[in-house]
Length: 442
Image (cartoon, rainbow, N blue to C red; front, side):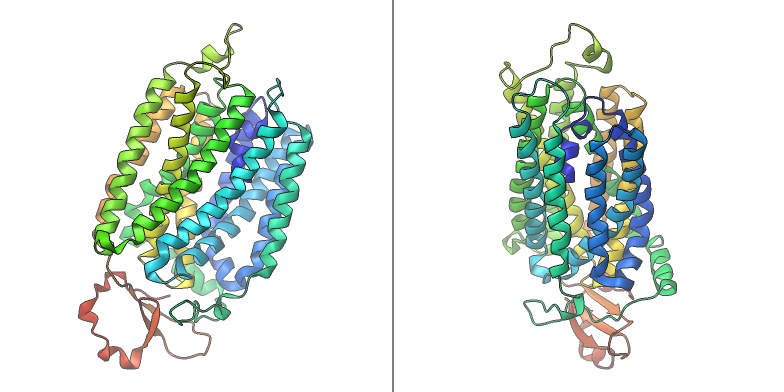
């Protein structure tokens, strides 16, 4: 729902300046709280989800007031909640499924996630179809708050991780609640993991494009509100399609080993992403900051000639987002089946993602030329995907890792494909079958 609101450009406001500044505040606190989000989740468990989700309701409610300072402050509060929410989500999505189903797990999550965004996009489209102003109605914000509030309280139905059993019969979590000292040490180790470091450009690009797509392409003044709202709906609808198809591809063993599928997935994302930005260059030549502010500039409507091409490109932007994010989650999921470690990986990813997003928002806020912003996107995301090939080379068919801090107080265990092999019996595990570059302690 939050994505649907932002996807209209300026969160449905005529002037996106306040939204840009709120998003910057959000990104700063999101960055910090993503890093500490994994420790919070590992210590307190899924109980953190309700207060984290309610921060979204508060943020949307801020647009019912004319107070820009309040909106920016709630953006910062939302960043705290989002940091905790998204690291918990990463821990759940990457560790709960069997290894053979991690692409499907992403697909299910991303499709449901963007079903909310699609419904959220349909609300302002219907509410504002005949609205000739550049700002959405009050009823739109109230509808968003009601749906978000319902989703937040639905999190109370979740079971603790140690009570969840995978389809293969193995428990999702063997851990007792962690502690701050242990978590600080484990977070520090992430910054020594060369795979995490080499993936930083990929992580940085994963939300950088939102600023251009939402605030420039869709919200930069080229389209009127009706066109922006329809663009927004199609964008999120294509996210559902992209996630559904791409998750199947990543899990499809007919394409070969996990390593082969990693290379195939990386290549698919790279080619479609580059193609989308090349298409964007041709559209971007049609408007600038200065041209949309001229008195005689006529905004593009859905009935105008050429609009079909514009919305198709925006649909491809949505498709790229889903497969780009899906590839990252799937790649991180090949590194671990452990709930604690998955949350830390997800937290590191969201930390880099949101630090970069804060920069991207300010790049737009200082009125960097639209075309320059497009080229920055192409450079960061292109380099990130090229470097990801190095990590793809390390992907194995089965993940082997060590876990400790066990709920039964026993010694550390070895997880092979998410299943326990005790340390005492480790000599019986034919470790030569597995590339142990994915091992570690948790």
